[in-house]
Every structure is written in structure tokens, then in C-alpha cells.
Image 1: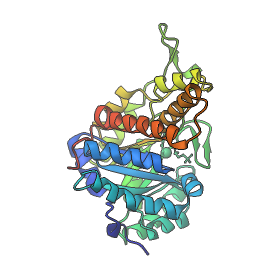
Image 2 (image 1 turned 90 degrees about the vertical axis):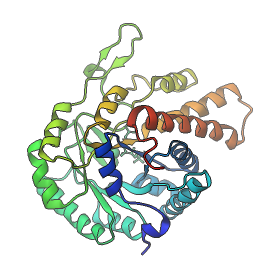
Image 3 (image 1 turned 135 degrees about the vertical axis):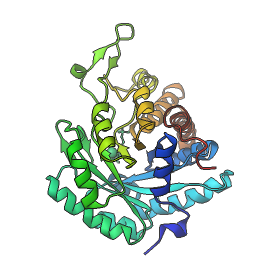
Image 4 (image 1 turned 60 degrees about the vertical axis):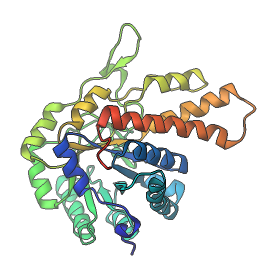
Length: 333
Ligand code: G3H
Ligand code: 13P
Ligand code: ZN
């Protein structure tokens, strides 16, 4: 048993309470490799932003869970080395789908876990979430649950269409499970293709897709039912068109990729939404930078020469999100 407190990590409780009070959101960035982790920590150290480092089960398979955990431990030390005196870093399991997986993360030094029972019938979601909460809380590990189904692919959970969270269920769900935060469905979805072209309009000037707005009415209803309760938004990448254009003009093919406009995320960050999940944008930043190097310098074969620019681009992206979208800069001095 490894306790996250011995690793210098924190759970989400205080982070979320301050974020709701302060009208900002904590960035939850996924990481799978060293360059992503370096970029996240550098961006957060330079902006003094609290951060949630997310590990999906896919990331555990790709990078090895032991290595990822030691990397997170190393991240705390790296942050201090960069001059961040009191780093507030949470290590979080993203989309845990079984009790066993969540337990293994709690036992292994994670400070927060998500149990995603959103594809289960309501009562089964409650039972599974409560089981994880009962275990995790013994070690002061916080638990995120999910109610409502996001469109698209959630790891192994496939949902054909989005089912918005039903506000009338949230009090019962939060009370009976004891979860610390709740991911809701208001129209976001995972990946770089969040909306089908037929759901969007087209900007006549640029020809780019303009997505439909998020269901802020559902969010407001949820907030009324659970005042001050931490709400989470998954699938919150904006799919920056400059990255899509670089990728497409350097040999890639991402037709009609579209994300959540940043003004909508800014609005959400000021509400009870206190955790905003971003993964795809970092993948796009990485890929755009690598494709550019490959196209411009075909003789390059030192990975540092293309992973380095990719890391710099991700750092820029993370800082932009922190300062211009979530407003979490300066909240962890
Ligand atoms: O929720 C999905 C995250 O972006 C993680 O994606 O399962 O491909 O690691 P992944
Ligand atoms: P994006 O695919 O929009 O980056 O969402 C990531 C996410 O929700 C991770 O859980
Ligand atoms: Zn997610």
C-alpha cells in the first residue's frame, strides 16, 4: 500500500472547494509519456496552477502503471525544481470501469479515482460507485462518478448518442453514493470529432464547422439541485483549427474535426464546473509539431528533434488553457 500523501500528491477536495468559490476550473490533463508530463508540469509551474494528472486504462496499458506512478512522483520533485514552492498535483484515474481497477489505483498511490458507471443501469451505477467510494474514502482518496452518457467512445464504453444528465436524479445519486464530484453530460464528447457535420452550421467565410451550443440549461438545473457540489466536464477539447490545419497541410487527414468553442468552456469554468478534461488538444499539438518537423526536415531522425518541438507546443497549449480558458493561474502559489 502506497499512500499518495507520502508522494507529495493531493486529492481534489480542497482544489475543488477553492475553484467553486473562485469561479475557475482545475485543468485535468491526460498523460501517457514523458514529454506530455514535462509539458504539463512546466506549464503549471510557470503559471502556478493546481493540476490533475489523469491516467486512463489505455495509458496504463501503453506506458505501464508502475512507471506512470513513479513519473507522477517525479513530477512533484520536478515542479519544485522549477521553482514551484507548493505544487498542488493530483494523480487521478480517468474512466475507471471496475472496482478492482479503482482499488488497485488507490493502493498504488493515486490521490483520486473516477469510477465510470455511466453505461450501467442507474441502480447498478449507484452500487458500483458506492463500493468504490467506501473503499477510497478510507484512504482519503476522492472519487469522481458519472451520470448521463457522453456521445462517442469512452474507453471501452461505446455510446451511439449523448444522453444528457437528468437533473432530477443528481441529488439521489450524490447522496446515495457519497461521491466527491460528478461528471455530467451536457453535449461534450471525447475525441477530435465531437459533432457530426450535420449537427453544425458552417462559417460562410472560413467554411469551418460551427458546433451547436452546450446544454447550459441542464448544467444550471444540476447546480440548483446540488449547490456548491463539484461538477466535471469530460470531452472538453476545443480542437484548435490551427493544429488541424497544420496536420492536414503536412500529410495528415483530419476532415471536419471539431471541438468545444473556448468561450463556452470559459463560461462553464465560472460555474460549478470545477474540473475540465483535456486530452485530444494535446494529441493534436503533439502531432502538428511532429508532422511539421518531418515535412520540413525529412533527414531528421533524432526523436529529441521532433519530440522537443512537440513538447514546447504542448507547453504553450497548456498555458493557454490555464490562463485564457480555465482561469486557474496563480491559484497554487
Ligand atoms: O476519455 C478518454 C481520454 O481521452 C483517454 O483516452 O483511453 O485513449 O487513453 P485513451
Ligand atoms: P477530449 O477528448 O475532449 O480531450 O476529452 C478528454 C477526456 O474527457 C478525458 O477523460
Ligand atoms: Zn473522459
